[in-house]
Length: 311
Image 1 (cartoon, one colour):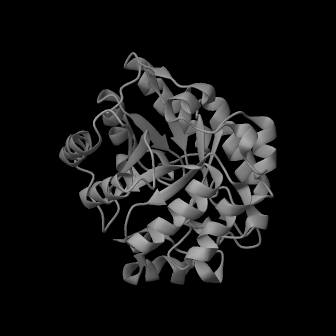
Image 2 (cartoon, one colour; image 1 turned 90 degrees about the vertical axis):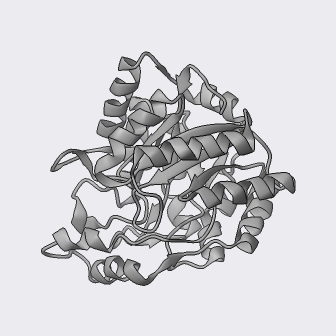
Image 3 (cartoon, rainbow, N blue to C red; image 1 turned 180 degrees about the horizontal axis):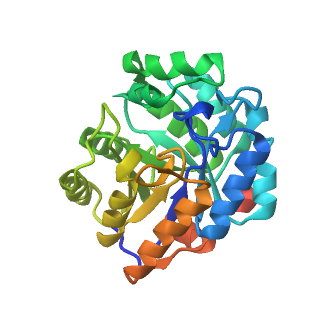
């Protein structure tokens, strides 16, 4: 692992898992997403991991036009690195999932490094009244859906987004096998270091939020990539901050945001993404490490620069 004195904070403001009925603070409209992202950047996030929503009812949207309703405003208001999801949601086709990335041509895109069960159906058990008809079925049916990325899909994304636009990736690894898949494509020359490996823990269907899993993932990543990668980690739900803290202690980077957890503490909803960023920043600085600026994050990850995006 490449170790730096500076820590990159990524913030994922909205995602495609949580629905409007789960929190009144989840950003849904373009204005809300822009304000959430800008606030997170002002609080210390140097990378913004972004999904789009349909502003009429809050459902996840793959449409480039929905991304373009907030991307220019964020770019005008902050120097943060923009990271566009290619994961979308499990009910989108690959072409749909790539629509926003191809239109925006960002510095970074997320990339799920394999198929996985991603069951968040339990999140619906706390909801007494759903705001929109689509939400209940969407959440409950995650029990029977697979987030799909086979090797053919991965190669398409690497070629059509990475090689075509000079975009780098946040390699989302939900399992140790995903590290070996990344190593396979690196050996073939489809992707180049430095690799930003994002360990994802605590999702039903992926690695559990056990600190020993995080330590093992770093051990295997070290054996496969040596100094050619930067590590980051987060855990979904209540383990969000403990896992970010452990990643920072191990010399890695962190990710927070309402995509990953709606809470700031036990039983207390976060009122904003900036609140989560400020909390993890306080923890990181208390550990004696510094927060990376967007300029420093670009240098650490060898990014193409914000002047070479398409928004």
